Image (cartoon, rainbow, N blue to C red; front, top):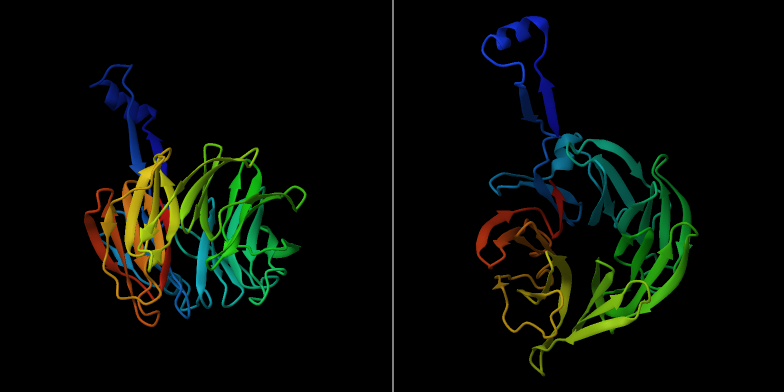
Length: 350
């Protein structure tokens, strides 16, 4: 926040005029912090009971379990899944407790809680004053997966819309919501959801084993285990595709964790990061970086590229504190930082 102070007044002015011309202006800009946790980023730790770690932008300061510290030992529930923002508010989803905890994203003071109408909530987005949160419900079937429509004034679920397919990541683009209908290595659809009518109005079919997608400049980029596809967002027709072949025939490796930053596509394969131009026609051959992990199930458990840095979270053993690593875009390690149990995502408070 920038605060501008105008030094005016007859007495002060008379002193200043003795040394300066009438055309001089005296303005002082002061950077006022928004709270203890701005100018840095948040790491969400899945845990048994979830926590949030704050790390400063210069990577020199970190603070663990900031919600508990600010709110007298209260917690955000079991198995923290994701965070989504709306202006100065952060909505923390914990799917083990069917809970969304709402805090000021810069101070982490509690604002409110959504504690009904949720059933294994996953990811959320805000559009037109309401939150839309994907819910997986009964794990034995995808037919009951739904979107919870949440009134942000009352923090009540005012409607649930069954999608009829798996639901996972959700993105807003030009007033429409795009919902990934693929989880845990299976699925090949993205639903186009109209929040005005609360109905699915179209469905995009992608390659098998869809695991993540991004929308940039009118194009949907869909990353599957063995390819990345580009689709026109209006017609949903495929523009192009690039096939991958990582690992060996006996031990093929899948691509995951799509992220697009500054016209570059980033994704992960096992414990390595790869990048390619946004319009590249061939798969990259060499990794930007490879990091060391002893985790059985948490390799690249969180991944993000932001402001010329690559962020990696390792799940560790899911029983004790783990770590995140931050690299520059050339793959040089900038810092390794201890965080909580099962870190799974990065959220930037800049």
